[in-house]
Amino acid sequence: MSISVLCWSLYTVVLLNFSRKCLTFNIGTQDAIVYHGKNGSYFGYKVQTYGDSNPPRIIVVDPLTSDPTRVGSGAIYNCDPKVKTCAPVYIPASPVLKINGIGLSMATSPKNMSSELLVCAPGLTYTCGSNTYVNGICYLLDNMLNTLTNMTAAFEGCPPAQLDVAFLIDGSGSIEPDDFRKMQEFMLKFISQLKEKGVMFAVVQFSEDIRTEFSFEGFRSSSDYSHLVRGIEQMGHMTYTSSGIKFVADKVFTPQAGSNPESKKLMIIITDGVSNDEHVTIPEALKAADDKGIIRYAIGVGAVFKDPEAKKGLEIIASKPFEDFVFEVNSYDALKEIEDSLKDKIFAIEGGSNSLNTSSFQRELAQTGISSLYTKDSIFLGSVGSYDWAGEVVEIRNNEETTIRPSIVQPNAYFGYTLAGVYHEEGFRLAVGAPRHDHKGAVFIQERVLKEWRTRQIIKGEQIGSYCGFELCSLDLDDDGFTDLILIGCPCYTSDDRGGTVLVCSLSPQLTALGSRLTPGAPSFTSFDHPRPREKMGKED
Image (cartoon, rainbow, N blue to C red):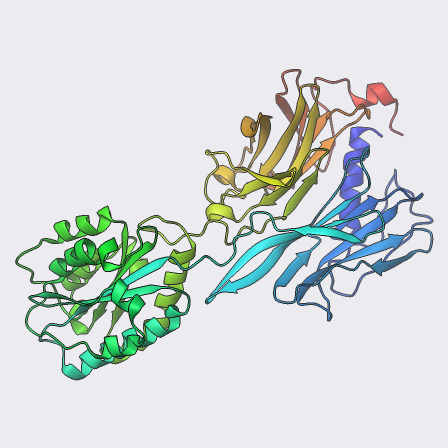
């Protein structure tokens, strides 16, 4: 088959998902076997021939269908051309986890190996506190479609609670005693919600003086934390906020006071007024906190923070960006309105980055298995949601995981969205699609050097928003075991009269991809390094 015919075959397969009839010049339709899915389903999202039988089985997936016997979505079907029917393939359900998107990616073992089918569901969802995380699970099936094992590469479970939280509360005379009690009840409820997760607490009160009400060690050793909180007596007098911040950094977040040096450190400042500190400046206090990596939330209570200068003072003492770390409420009664939001943000910090001024996630939204590739040595799985959607690829080789994530990959690049194997006389290379890299999309050619993966080449998209790398196809035209062409789909590329394009890349002897563009209207060839398929195989018709 010539490359032009193959390209048109690919378009035909796509069209079959949306149209009952499709006129083609190179695919017989007279005696076609048609397999039907449920109405409104995505039956046929991916199709794969599989197995040693003659004719081989046809594996069809429907990643969005619901199954009453399991929680989640997705189904795999074994369609037998001999009996012209499809039967569902059993995939073990999880008793506790929700698995969505079974079959969003599939891969088969190489020809010279025993037949194995890899089926992935990149929607393995679970909750940690009130946060929902999304990883992935893949199933390895044998020649009889029995499940051999499953794998959860790059799985990020609920993080262990290694978080020390210090409340720094305003005890100045401007706070009414009844409002001070409401602040105590707010702290008490907040502590009760997080204590069972192993979070440690301390409370410091500030006015003209600074007083530790109880330390982390005191909290750890107490059998009744409610007594510790309700036993706090209001000090009165002035508002020395910066002295309080520096005191907490210097005296409370210490091993002597029971703070774990390995824990993330969080300070929650509650105040009803502007600091009038005469002893410690704001820059001095913030430096002390920053030096210890203390993340700071600032809660301003009352109408005083409607004033721009007062609000600015609140923003200065919080971590950045202040939009994520500053809360304003009208009264102490309204503290309960921010409980859930503050708790969610703390969960994000607890399970995410160690960075001082961020609460971003690492692998908690990885969606591992959105793409997959099975080679003689390794299984590769794409994880597009890792590290702020920069993405990564996980190689599983001899039961060990290796991460592939070039430093040049930008946030939101979707590195790992697609995968393809590139086989060359020099050895194996991995093509990785990143359709949002640099806003145009790109394909990274990765090379393994000893145990480390390095970027050999980057094939970049040409147009903003073109999504190049959304689809990859590696072709061996002459069946010699080596890759001749790499097709790169850019579905959002636009020109005057059409949308979408395919970059056709051949490999030079130096393993450099040289490209031309294939548009849906007129498949054509330009200067390839290899002989044209037409010259080698004769007329296509």
